[in-house]
Image (cartoon, rainbow, N blue to C red; front, top):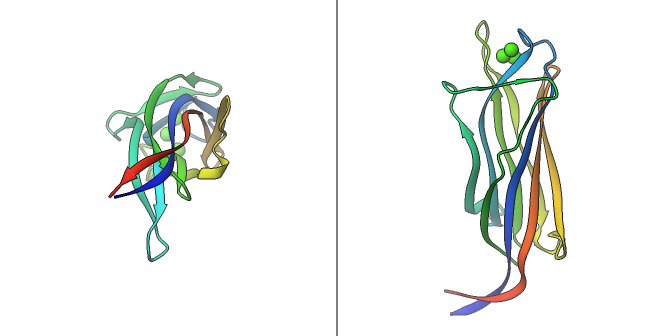
Length: 156
Ligand SMILES: [Ca+2]
Ligand SMILES: [Ca+2]
Ligand SMILES: [Ca+2]
């Protein structure tokens, strides 16, 4: 057994906002996909690997969410977990936009990657992650709080 420094963080999906409907049919976007908070480490091959995944929003393509321009959702769903020294906190996800007459629009797999040492230790920070394609745009906001800062955790 050894120990590693960790921060206990709480990530809250605060807001999903439809910022532009663009050239989509009608006056709404029809979005689905997932938004997550992840604890991510870099493995021996230098590949990013999720150590923790907390899903904060998830809709399948048969259960799309319709959003008119400037509409906001406030999911306020949280995940609490540990991020270890030298690892990353990722917030973001994968959104798609449903279309009837052509293939669905890929709005992107997007994450903000925050290194351990840059996770703000006081107060709560907000991070925004944007998804878009062909003039259709959705902006998401995540709140990040540090519940316990730089404490030693036993590890195998
Ligand atoms: Ca579309
Ligand atoms: Ca539409
Ligand atoms: Ca559509």
